[in-house]
Length: 145
Image 1 (cartoon, rainbow, N blue to C red):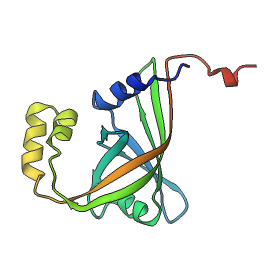
Image 2 (image 1 turned 90 degrees about the horizontal axis):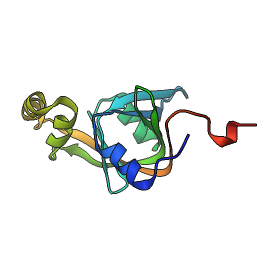
Image 3 (image 1 turned 90 degrees about the vertical axis):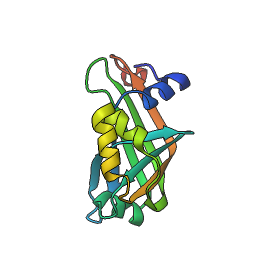
Image 4 (image 1 turned 60 degrees about the vertical axis):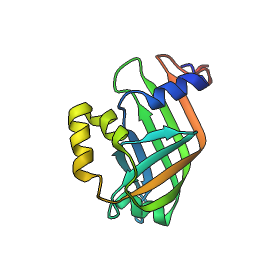
């Protein structure tokens, strides 16, 4: 499986409406995975959550996270991320309408944004320290004898 080039990675992460599956560590020691809307800007991922979301509490306790963004249909494209999470605003009401439009479409996205834009969210930046990508069918050479 070939890796994505830099421009291919950028295009994959900023187009379409794929969700980011965020993995955090629960206090029980088990991984906790939650699907989230995201934005990819300047080499980092931005996600937003409600203050009582379990995954937000996990990040407060342990900022090391993992994420996966992948296509559901063949030929598959996958991006795996290891990152350190930074809470950058505990009561964010910034402009996230472009997220709603990306994930819900023009009409529903605009309405959802208007109905909920006043509700504060926790804005978190995921700063990748490792990104692994691959696309298409086949085996990576390291798995071949």
